[in-house]
Length: 91
Length: 271
Image 1 (cartoon, chains in turn brown, blue):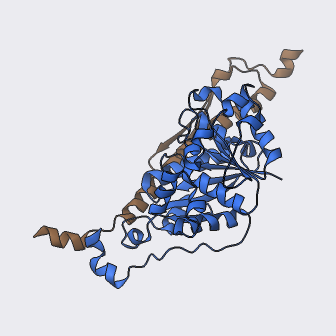
Image 2 (spheres, chains in turn red, brown; image 1 turned 90 degrees about the horizontal axis):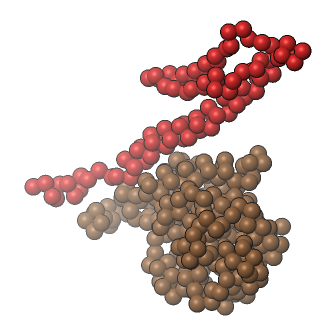
């Protein structure tokens, strides 16, 4: 009983393909872009800090994360106990 | 000024080599000086599709390593004397392609030809990024099928970040070439429509190449389809794509995607 009915009722598959691609690519574009964004952000933040303070490169952490609907940019800078301004260091 | 074009796709088997040959020949038919360059080191096939496989003596790796002059490696087409082929090496591995070597060869080709068409290997590895690096224009070959569209999206991302133009902060010109398109299947809702693919990838359309037995017939005899069957649907579609590539504002006619009465009644059964 199924064969003839299924033949005529078969759902067009192209619309499924289109929806799957739209969802998938929205994710992939965001994640590929973010890798570059984190690297750029980290480098630029380091550059700004280096203007004023001497700081170990590994003491600056930049993370991009997601919790539910919200994207979170987390920047963690570990300061030395007594931050020395650059000018003081040079003197 | 010479234009360097990369024919790329990410996914294999979608028609990069066929399209490079057909577009190259059609450009040459328009009187342009053209070279088609095979970047698929270790898996060369452009020579075979062009019908020049028995005339390969030197290849691009030989030129890069200084074992041959560029002029010695170029193979002039027997049908069109303003069309040449620079073959890839079949025996060497792809590490023999160096960024500096490719830059030198492409710069020299720019001086000798109006159009340099680079046939990219599949994938997103070194061979593919080297093939696209010096391009002014990219032709993204895509089949109306999910994996091909996804890979094309990835390649578009690379074109916008990894090419010399992107690194200089310029935008690379990108065009979509939709190949193996079957209007009847699209009409039945069993294949992505032209509009679907354009919406998803959002780059301008260079042409729609219909699925056709002429394409296989052309590669069987080693002739670009624009030479062996210029009046066939794929032959015409490639010729029109070339007119657009040369800057002509020629509208793309989307093959009918409406379901006719007969196919509405019987279409699904014959599928």
